Length: 434
Image (tube, rainbow, N blue to C red):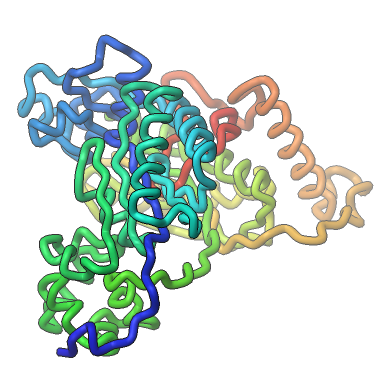
């Protein structure tokens, strides 16, 4: 072990303000419906006791209900619980309004998730008193201009990781400051799992190296702590926990996809096929909107009797054409059917998903040499179908979701596949028209 004060660390002023909306989905529902305010509510993806909570109000959390709690169990924990279906489009609308409100007070450096934003403090904002006053103005502005139910917890710290940790330390409606002078000792009461990036697997790895809490990690030399962490830049976490503001590591999108949990009565062969086609169309529309092409299609599913995920894939000629993706998807269904037939209880799939992987940006696109050939000529076909796919995008954007599509999209054989908010990704409002 080596004392921290024997190492020369750079100046560590307060540099980040992290804002986390409290019980966000549930708070939006309470804001939209005054009858729900002050009551324990649970937001669920579908109206079924077999599904799980995707959000719980502050009042529901007092009963031990949280994200991931099965609805049937939540009802047992709280007899007065109100279950309301998710309205993802509303959550995106409120998100956009909240981000715009934060911008009135300080530039938003990074939107971290649907209910979290991070803002870098300038030199005239990072004094302790100035940062606290700024946080109070932001919180008050959201309540006044977005809604009284929209409370938030704010963390202020020398780097973004610590600011995020601080925002979790006091909920709801909290405000915590982590000064360099208090670090890392102020963190010793937290669990390793409270740190973003440390899950069960990493926790076990650290324990095998004799690190069972944040104190033991911080008391090591940076290089030794990095060795326990493993991988490149393993000492990065040590410096972050001591308040050093390191440059962000560059990231890029590697895949675009959607998945859907099927209703209990719609888990058979035809419903699964139609749902997968619908998900593929949504993913391909997003691919075009973001100006990407894909070179790999992945079909994945979970059967009712198995928690593991089944996968199959098909290489694509670099494309963003819905017709080409659907044609490749059809070649994967026989593998899925064969896997389902050998399972007890016949073919019953709980979740189906489609992912477009190995994506790359479209750059320097040129008109096709084959665009004027006969439409049935193999060389011309994708040029024509890609133009048709883009035309469908424009029609759906103008006239609404499913104004035009490929194949059946409604009726008794298929669930309604809407846009949902995944962890860390906020859908564009355009997606609600796809």
